[in-house]
Image 1: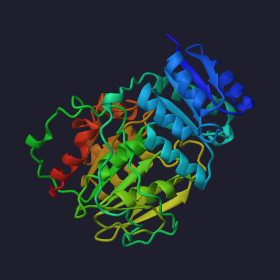
Image 2: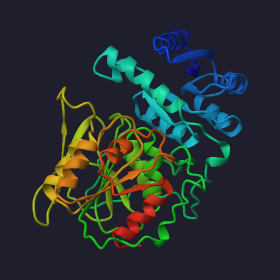
Image 3: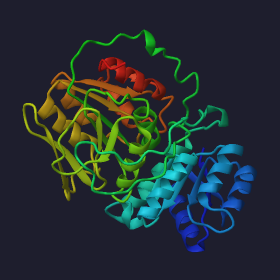
Image 4: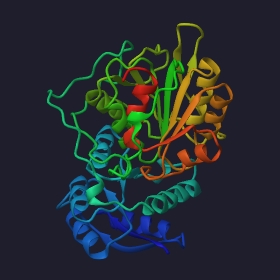
Length: 386
């Protein structure tokens, strides 16, 4: 059965272009259009689409407000289109906060290396998130905080982006953290006793919400550095890192070339670049660099960073592969497994897209398959800080 799509944009040109691209795929059917957020809310209720593509800036009712109303009344998987600017990054993060599942740059030439790849990516994203069914009752309440909005903290390696975002929480961890999703009681699972030096987390579609869900639960005394590899455009990672830093007890920063790895700090790989680890013994630093290799699809790539972790830390790595399309992370996880590292994968039920974690699980690399709501607790127990 074809995935039914509602296309929402105030530009007739963009509505037509998105519709033409989607309907090149026989498994996708565009069933309607909306020219503003208010009309989108009404047509979501009337047409009951499987997926909505949504612009951010529109008259009458903007895209973010429309997402909030749709998710409250008729929860539907929503793919946002946004500009690759600082304001666009903030708006996109707000849309994910409101309940959107994923996003793409509005300029198609920014999506992929060529037009064919961009078309395939849009079609595949729509089909993947169209398989996800969302219940209004499956979204937990936002993270409560009694303290004032924090500001960007020093992580021992000062961030240069200077962007501090308002304290907002993503209110809907990856698609479906219902009570059933977290029913695997991890309180009875004992730590393995294995010693670690590094935690590495790779993710893509659904990752911003998943990462926040995990990182906001980690204690300030978390004993290891954390590497975060999220498929995200370069314009978005400074704002995303700053937003996480404002919400978390640990420090979070966008990684910079030469950053020294310190415990209790998470380093987010910059969009459009690769992140490697260099050094031996007690001092390890990050190498962040532009990558123009046509052989590597993702920039940043989970495989590239995981492989570097295997080379520098050997088996003293705890790697987690979260929700995302494709199989990025499988080859890197295999290299880590070969040197004795521990690999976990998010389970299917709580993944927005069960692609990356499934690739790792099907390859026999993951020792545990975890619901999103359980990951932070398992991390704190396994690393001895909880």
